[in-house]
Image 1 (cartoon, helix red, strand yellow):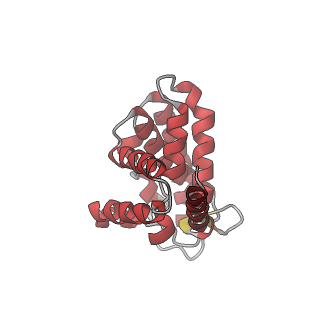
Image 2 (image 1 turned 135 degrees about the vertical axis):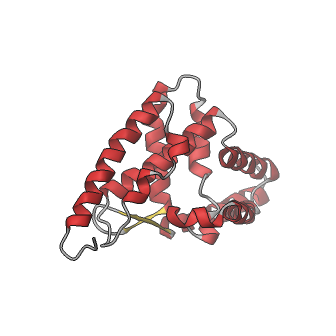
Image 3 (image 1 turned 90 degrees about the vertical axis):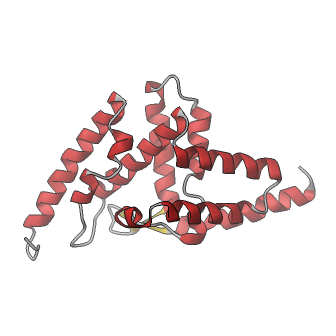
Length: 198
């Protein structure tokens, strides 16, 4: 790399640091808002511990996709899953535009690689992208079932969230079934709490 390319990489990394403080709709077990970076970290950890069950998946490519899948959110922020349905294609277009902005300082080969991986993820066009999508949905649900969520948190939304990506293969479906059981339990607890509407 040239001096200017190194400067560009450092500028990009400084911009990406914003994901550490970009909040998501999930809450941690200590009752703090989860950041996009925290979500991405555990998504990568899930990929690492589950990938041996998917021998046809290129692990390096899977992890690269997991690392960059929400990178554009450093500019536009996270859109909570319940709101994503109303935005449809607009969310993806906005996030891609923001991704291209943050990638601007990188040398063209790196910028092109990350853009290609993001497009692959968004289209779920490879085994790695489909697995990343499934794990992304499962990590979100896992956090929702684990976190100290505020009153009125909509647990039942998760019972349908991401189902198209998490109904197969068998291991993903099994993880989903366990998380659905936990979601149902948390929903019942929330609905029976003092002051709950019902």
